[in-house]
Image (cartoon, rainbow, N blue to C red; front, top):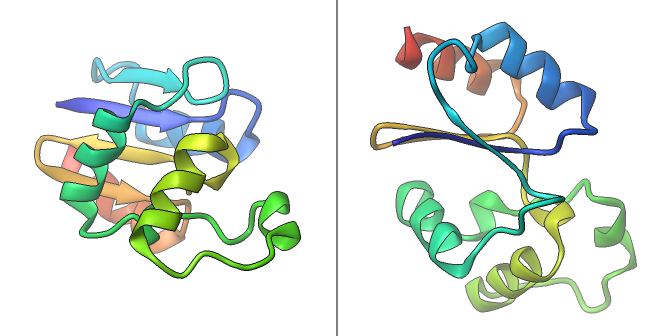
Length: 115
């Protein structure tokens, strides 16, 4: 599978997608704001990532208002399914590999795998 979960209004996602030339490589693009993540999609991401926590964004503005903060896998999963901003972006799935987030190292690893 070649898929990317991203936010169309996110300049960082756009920069990474342009840098990796994902559209040329026939990736399926899913804007998570306009097309919600399904439970099945999230479960597939979790299988590749190892945990829902690895997919969870603690820099989302809504995270700061959460009280109590999530502490279990079930809580992370529930929050990601309820609110798209809790998914760390972008999530790039290439074959059976997953690359989560926008760290320089992560983008470099995705680029190496995709080439």
